[in-house]
Image (cartoon, rainbow, N blue to C red; front, top):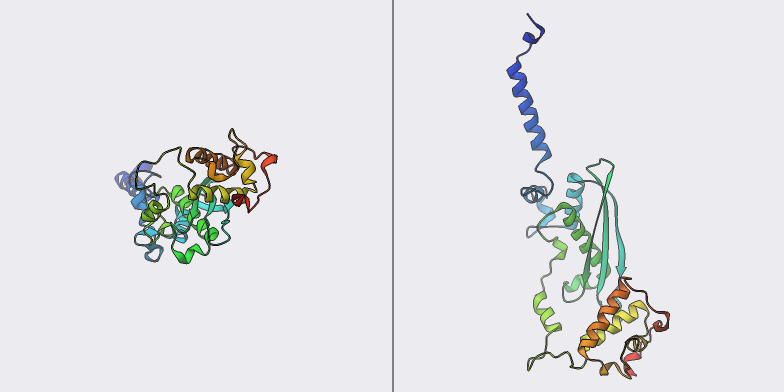
Length: 254
């Protein structure tokens, strides 16, 4: 009898097939495949879901279970609220670094979230930076996990769409014209950004082609361009000139 006859070859083949089947079942679908989203969502415990949306804590646990150890989890950029009379708006960029499949290969994910009274329930408006950080972390984990849902912390009971429409509502009579005077929301935004960036607002609005004695002389079109420039300063796309630094809280009254 040959050595090969000592084994049941067909049993070996069947066993190999079963082993591969068990291995494939354990591995689950391919990352980002059509079946991946449902596979990930099934991993959440009942207590980690709110109306079908996973909490940030649940996303964190499942990410480590499926993707690997999280070696870095932190806010990388923070723009705190600057409104002295209210919670204001806070923006946070969050970064997560994962030891991918615990293989030693590093992958980095990041995302941003902001909080203001129009998109956040009142209880959490009292802590805008912390809330924005949690939201940004949830968004980053969602991106890493490739799930097609919002994190529970991103939801709000408020009618956000209605609040936004009221905030940026255009005049009800006639069409919005670029030559119309600057709007109050635009003035408030310029003030908030100049305070945040320590910019002298009057020096800033006069740093372009126009010359203004008052912010109210600026048109909506020009104000929009000014807001774009402030965003470039905030994201450090452009450097803030030294001759326009030094915030003056009474600038709009001059």
